[in-house]
Each structure stands twice: as structure tokens, then as C-alpha cells.
Length: 402
Image (cartoon, rainbow, N blue to C red; front, side):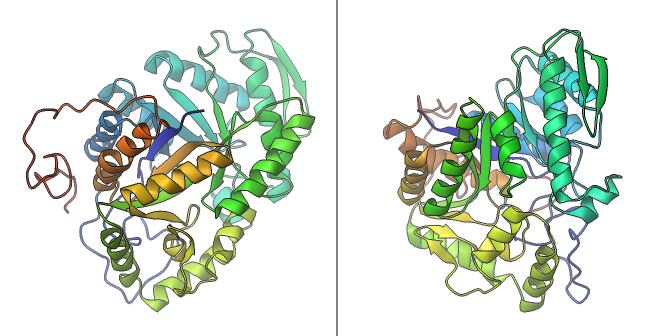
């Protein structure tokens, strides 16, 4: 079982801090007395293409693209980026219930033909009623998961290429059909920590995706979903969503984490924690419990830092350390059964290079990757011991300022 590495596309904007990186909004956190940080990188196609090309060159298999109010549409953005890349896959996040499941199945089939099979699907049921209502969805938390269950049944049904009928609480489909089914069928990534989410994941997901909790908690989740899937007669694989801060030495990595933390004033953290505390997502509440809103003892497990979650919803932990440290932690999660690692870092362009040129070769040497990606810079003299493409070498071209 080898490791599958994926990166992240910041389609809401990017930057060098944990806050004020969004090009369109503050993400619901009001900071009226704080002047926005300069240097936010707009998520235009030129900048996103740089990240996608870097990810492909460095050996990442796919890039996750988020969904929601504060980012560009994932379907349209990624199909455009497919024209700038050759092999990179796109893990497209989408919300069931805001479009017809038959239309979603058709969109996926078209996407596969346009990109020659480079689509993966990340199902986001939604844990924030305020966000859901923006899209016209007024179901409560558990009923959203019940609808997702029906939605994915319909999607898989119409992918059969034959007329498909379905009658449920949320959908009635008469002769649903995808005339040209996708080939290959996109793998479905699915997350959710609640009692309502588990059975849906067991019935429909190819990869169950968890946020970056300490290994023992991740093991408990794996055992839970694996047991539910066995009752359904299915096998589910597992993935984890983490940030990374990887450097040539552990001291450098933790200094970077400390700098990110130093940018956060108490009012910003308090406002973020208040907003995040209203989330209905069980996974979000588990993330908040890792740090309790405190800056103290943020290393909650060796090399696992919860500082990101002080102000960021969703994935709130980062692997921090030397390249070997980060590789050690990936190997530890892998030993538990985690195959897919969906990673990110601020800013996403530079952090992709730190991880790609530092950790990926280490993982390959450990036998966790099939090969070390070939670099087009092979044979090019390095500057100060670092490849010209890496941070600290030749300047990286970025959009929207540095």
C-alpha cells in the first residue's frame, strides 16, 4: 500500500498569514479595527495555474479544490486548470442537495471526457446551516446526511448507463440516465464525524477523509468506519487532511509556525473561535477541542500543531518539523491505514516546493512512493545548495504581490 499525495488549490485567495488571505471576504470573522494585511494573492487563473503546475511537477497526484461562498466555483476553475496541466487530477468538492444528482452525474461524466479521466469527487454535506441557507438549503444537520445518502445512490445508479428509477424522501427519479457514463468512474472522497455521517460514508465512499487529529483518534475513526463498511459488504480506504510546515531543520519549521502564530492578535482568535463554535459539524467541534482556543501547548502530538485551527475552520492542524520529521508522521499515519494525504500550507506555492523537494524524496526512499518524480532541473547547478526552483533560490513568480 503506497501513499497518495495531494495538494490544495486556494481558490479563495492565498497569502503568508493564517488570516486576511481571502481575496473576497474575511470569511465571516469581523476585524474592524485591524488593517488588512497586504500581499493577499488573488485566486486568478494565472496564480492557480502556477500551483497546479508545481504540484504536477513535484509529484502530487491531485489537488483539492474547496466549495463554498468564499471561493471560486470548483468545477469551472478546475476544468480550466486541466488545460494547463497534463496528468494532475482534481479533487473537486461539491455540495449534494444544491443541484440535481442526475445533473451532477452528467457533469462528472463530461468532466472525465474533457480531462481524460482526471476527476475525483469530494462530497461535502455541510456542517454550517448559515452557509447552507445561502444556497437555499434549509434542512437540518442529520437530514442533510440522509439526503446525501439518497443523492449518492442516484449518482451511482445513473452511472450504470441504463435508465434508473429511485424513490426516496428527498428524490424521485424516473428513468434517470447518464447516456455516456464516466470512464473511469470518479472515486468518491467523503468526510464526516457524526453518527449520521458514518453509515453514509460506509455505503458510498471510496475514500473516507478525516481532518488531522492525533494518531490514536484517527485510528478510532478508521476502526469505526471500517466496521460500518464491513456490515455493508464494502471496503473503504482512508485519507487525512493536514497542513504542512516542512523545513531543512526542525528549528526552522517551528520558527515558521511561531511567526504564523505571532500574526494572530487575541481579538482575532476570540472572534474566530466564537464563529467556529457555532458550527454544527462534529468534525469542527473535534478540531476546536484539540486546542480549546488557547495558544498554550499547541503541539498536541509529536510534530502535530493545532495553531492553524485557532482562526481557520475545517482542517486545523499542521505537520511541523524537518523533512524527516514530517515523513515520520506520514509513515505513522500510513501504518494505521491512511493512504491518501491531502496537504496544504501558507503560501501554497512555496509550501508545495518545501514539501515536494524535501519530504517526497524521503518518502520515496522509504518505499512509500513508487518513484521520485523526475525534476526538469536535473543537472542544473544549485544556488547555495538549493535547487533554483525552491524558496531561497531564484525568485518565484506570484500573482497579486508577495
